[in-house]
Amino acid sequence: GQQLNQSPQSMFIQEGEDVSMNCTSSSIFNTWLWYKQDPGEGPVLLIALYKAGELTSNGRLTAQFGITRKDSFLNISASIPSDVGIYFCAGQLLGGGADGLTFGKGTHLIIQP
Amino acid sequence: SAVISQKPSRDICQRGTSLTIQCQVDSQVTMMFWYRQQPGQSLTLIATANQGSEATYESGFVIDKFPISRPNLTFSTLTVSNMSPEDSSIYLCSVVPGLAGRTDTQYFGPGTRLTVL
Image (cartoon, rainbow over all chains, first blue to last red; front, side):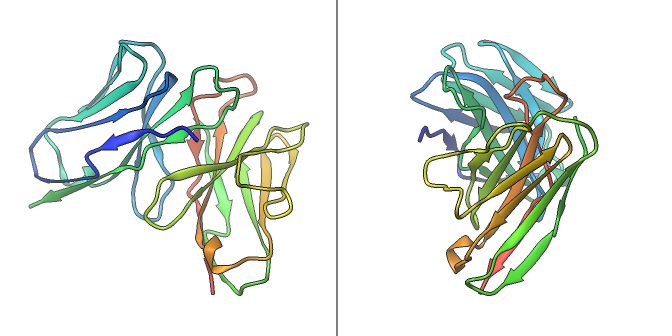
């Protein structure tokens, strides 16, 4: 199936630092979504992007839908301990015919005290 | 969004047995999905379970192994049949809120953590 290349795989940062992660694909996506998953929980939707070039914020989080429709990034500013978790990008393929989402492999965010 | 619950939250099962996982939503939704998340991995779509139609399975997943029911607009079940240790995963349901929402904005339940011995 289609793959989303998500990077980095993991990040070790200090509290207060800014974080940036991204997803790319060789295919065009209709929608990009960013989720956060805490241990033992289901993914929680952070930001949804529906238009190429769209830039959307949710508190300290900002995400953009790439102009080529093949990539997206998520930035977290001034990280805090509760930001720890796994962040997944996900998307729905343009004209894919299926309604399910394709997920990236995740970015594991670790905040060092 | 929607409030989604799953039962059981976790289970440990013997190989060769079957487990039925329930997904309950607090509002009516047309579209529900079942995903699998193997240990340390990302999520993979198993099937789409829309009310009023047969479930649609993704490549690599078959109805005999993962039968799905969708009896109404707030409930679905996924059965993992004839389990083997390779079926040890987190199974998650997701929904698109409402009866005519965007198919691409999905909200997830808390997951069912299955361990097969």
